[in-house]
Image 1 (cartoon, protein in one colour):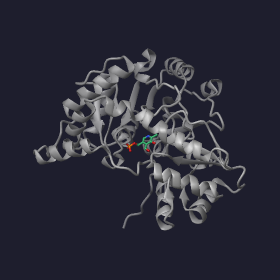
Image 2 (cartoon, protein in one colour; image 1 turned 60 degrees about the vertical axis):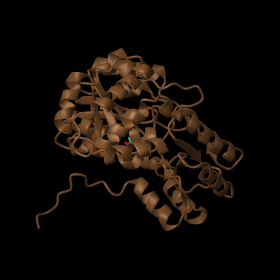
Image 3 (tube, rainbow, N blue to C red; image 1 turned 90 degrees about the vertical axis):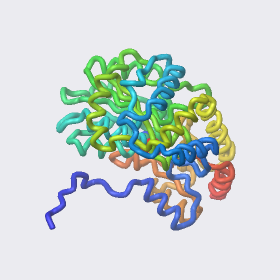
Length: 381
Ligand SMILES: Cc1ncc(COP(=O)(O)O)c(C=O)c1O
């Protein structure tokens, strides 16, 4: 047996899997992993059945089913006012994670530096490191998670190749302001950087906040990848379907990687989604749907010992437990599962140096009854 030389020696089970396993072991309410505990639309399910039964069961075109790419182009143009060429600027992927991974592998070479903002989604770092890239993490701290652009600019070197952003942001629930996006555009232009913009929560914005896609920012348009997820859009995280947008020269390079990793995504599901999103109402109501759930959770925890940080977008709420315990986030998250039957995620897991700020992330993409039960458990502390 040859020696295994791990390419990712620091990587173990993701924090989401760890917390979900513990939640199952202790039969706790699972607000840790970001997935709905309710079913997707019946209409969508019957469309999928229809296409399976009608024989749409072989490889889709490498870039994805054209009917779906056309629907995405219409949606993108209607929402952000900038045209997308369905023939050359969209690829359907096996989820947002694959889109992110393939975009990183398209651009990152050994020695390239990538700026990311922490707390950050956990798939970014290993994908960058696997291709020999170096992560330069910009730590943002509670309660505002403000970006100090002077500091960001100081982190740019001749090796910096890309900035990776997540807007709206998991786990902070913040939506990037127009001013931050303008600073990003200036930086990317001045230092000639690519931008990888993870926008999987684009429709989940609340309280009058508006999501601005980098696709609609002229300075960023040609140097950016935009990643979206049908798992988030349609309450179907288990289907692992998503897509990526980029201008034609970038997309051509992306597809060289994509065609030899997955080649093409699930065919009948693509046809079904194309039909389903032809009715824009199906995704336009997502913001108010999740805003109702956010409000239910926030109202239920008002006056409790947990302090709620602002949640402008995504389906995550941060809880500050400083008034309850001074245990580390990891220890307190474990204690909540074992003693109070509720699973959350320590926010320290989203920082490379495990910064402890007495913060837990809870996912409110759950049935109202699950949220109400979680409120009871948390209020009993
Ligand atoms: C910020 C962020 N990006 C990407 C993804 C992955 O999307 P998908 O499930 O489509 O791979 C997630 C899932 O939780 C996420 O939170």
